[in-house]
Length: 382
Image 1 (cartoon, one colour):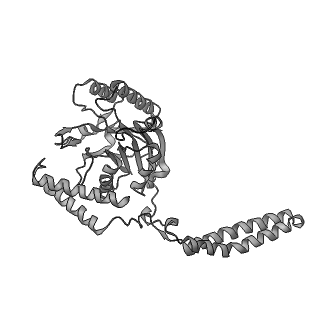
Image 2 (cartoon, rainbow, N blue to C red):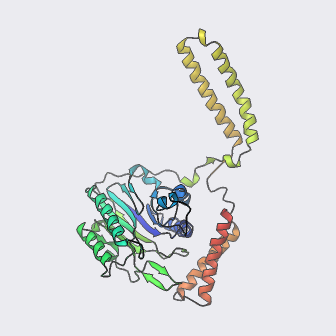
Image 3 (tube, rainbow, N blue to C red):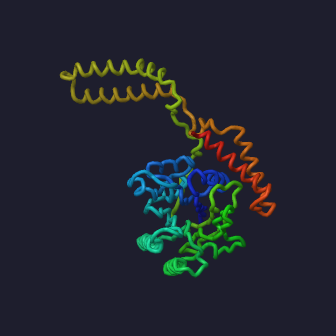
């Protein structure tokens, strides 16, 4: 029986801007694979991608390594790609490549690649663009057995006659690939929307080598989106003979952890002193009799001491350290924030009904509501 995978690609325009959109997509669509571009994280901050959701494992890279190593950062952060794989697929996924502008993973018979191509105005853009295409070609050629899906921000409109558009279309044709937006035509194709500058274009794409296995494609219009890109969604089918099974486990949100950051450490220290004192006394006795104790008896006694030590530490933690889910102490999310979010969603819906005006009272109210949610939540997390 064929299994479908839901794949989303999203240019976040920075982790903070894209977080709200990511959370909405995950809550409503529960994707299997989430490709992100422009998370803007430095190498030391890549672990922040793990904070997006406990249900995903992250493969990715930063575009700012050379910039950071060269000295103080000037200007805003930039770039970066990542692929988040739902943990139910964890035993079937392999990391293939992570570089400044692409991340690739293999899941069952599929090769999933996310890209962030050089934007206009960048020095030596044509050369950089060709280098990324060459890197993609090398990955595809080393995995001839795989179906391929490439998703991301190509930073060009592939329907134009520009040099880079022609080069990219030649790459697509050479690898017998097809654009998913052509397989499933949409009336509204723009994926880059900057209302402040009145800029609209189609620069985000999903392309695949296996058109027959593309089940669906769409552009996601979210209730709240602080990025200037719209996410795109593709549903792909696994091969019937792919011998695939996913790991279905209990919801990760229900997993509890020892929260040492909220623990009464003085109580833990006192209890551990009491429970470990007998272990220490037994150790001293064993050492004092080491010269007269048989080697086999010494090994058995050492093993027993180890088990007693572990049992004591477990009992100390169980008795004094609180255990909660990771989200339990997110005290900064309040009833006020919930109301602000509801107002922002309602304003966005009214804005759509009014044909998305770019100025006037409806536009101003919608922008204000969204900024309130973002600014209050940012203050709360600090």
